[in-house]
Length: 284
Image (tube, rainbow, N blue to C red; front, side, top):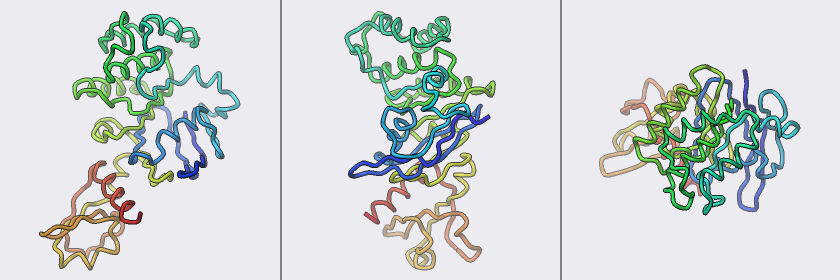
């Protein structure tokens, strides 16, 4: 079942444009939404949720138009766009007592399990929490009404490695029954290599690719060679790094030939982002 379908979403600003963004996510999977800073990740999420007015395109949640059934759809989604910064001087317990009233399926027992798991002191105020703890509290609020789609912006940012690993484990537990899906943007690509099923990569307001993670990684290769080997392959490279010993670059796997004598390696998600960013800076 398709929980989320984005079709030709667009938004125009004076100095930036979101251009025909399209991707979809079925039930039971985790999709990582990646791209360099300023690529359009947060703008996409905000346009999807009606927090920023879109200029074009459509958003379907659970098979229906989101904006035509926004109230019902929001009962089924959990959203965290960073830490809780509202009511910074109000006790967490009081904030929760207000938030729970908005959700018909609020589960107090489930909420308390997250509070315990994240080690959150409800007597404290958001202003007294670290950035990481505010994010944890925001996640606890977003996951306590049995949402079937979680939309998260940088959920692991500010968390230490142990807390990040615990959160990724929790994400895997949530999707295991096959009913819940998670879409989250992040610049910590190592988290996605651990847990993501799909990758959607956005660059300069455009979707470069949206596909299964393994296929996305397989579609690129890192190549390394001497300066003498560079002219024979340079026109096919997405971008390069040159040094005194030769060069390294990224190429689409389909652009490699049996005649290439360079060293070929599999990339990481970080590699793909870095080499794409070098292409952008080269063409700027």
